[in-house]
Amino acid sequence: MQTQILGLLTPLMALLFAVAFAVFWWAGGLKRHVLGFAIGYVLFAAGFLATHFLPADLPYLFHLTQAFYSAGCIIYLASLCERAGQRLNIPSMIVVYVVTAAVLALAVNITNDVGPRLIIVNMGYGVMFAMGVTTLLMSSRRSVIDIAIIAVVAFQAADFLVRPNLTLMFERSIPAEVYRESVYYSVIGLVLGIKSVISAMVLIGATIIEWTISMRETSSRDPLTGLLNRATFEHSMRTLLPRAETEGRSLSLVVADIDHFKQVNDIWGHQAGDVAIAGFGDLIRDMVRDCDKCGRIGGEEFCIAVWNCDSAPAERLADRIRKAFARLEHEGLSDDIRLTASFGVATARSGETYEDLFARADAALYAAKSKGRDCVVNADSVADVAAQNAVAFGDTALLRASGG
Image (cartoon, rainbow, N blue to C red; front, top):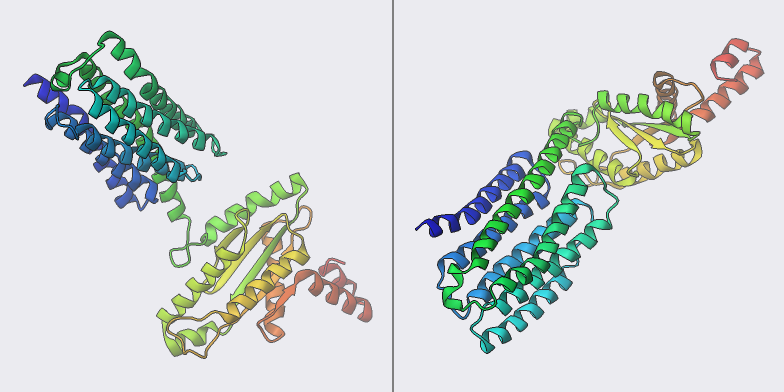
């Protein structure tokens, strides 16, 4: 009776961890790799329960448990690799499983001794985890929690490859019918329980960190577009400007405004207007780089901080977005209706504050509106025109205001 109870601890812990990861995924809106952890632990628990409750001398017992464990390993490792931004070679993992299953079938038919079976299946798991370690090491992520995950996976790989051989040195032959009374069965129950707890604790820590970051990002983003909200965008600009000057890099600001947006709300309603704003936000996010910052700073007004980018390429980026938006269809509007946007571009000057940079880009946006909308105006060209007018009319005050 005591053995039966102890044998249930590992699968029950695995199911508890599976529930925990499922709750994290569902309640926190986290990425699918967290759900993968839950599925992996469910499959591990299924394998534990099959080993514990099915008759030990069943010919297909090791095949069934191997199928559960292998599926759990593949999903578990694939989820870890996806979290690290890597793709696990799943076809190779399946090949390992198929080869191991074929050798296992041969061993089952040859001998009643479970020793060779244990070595075969554990070697398969060890190879899978070693492949997982290799894939994780290819990731550039090296935070403390990432290193801890790699260490846990490496430990599991070593355990699967070494432990069965060491244990069976002390118990040379284990008939299938007495498998559960063997030293090996007692050792494996303890080791698997410890590994499950250690692995789950590390992954729960990583998941809590991801949840915290997700909550922080949610509070800093505009709920309609998913872009940075005004306060967060302005804070990022006040960080980027001194960094750009220190590193000697260019930083350009693009300010965009959807043309005649009030008419969209008046004619088609605010819901259609929200769809147009969300579509513009999606378009901007898809067309900029990861190093750039995008924000919605007003009702239909957007900003893009273009990192390490001079005035001319920033202007070309704005024009590409302008043309793409002019072709975009919007649900809720008439089929023949296309919206346009106007853009102002300015590149930061030495020692310039965000307020000054925004004022110049916003003035360029106002000039684009004055030119008839659906166009891009560069603040440098506005300043050049103002300087030429100042020289022509002898207005030195206007010349100074234009930056000349």
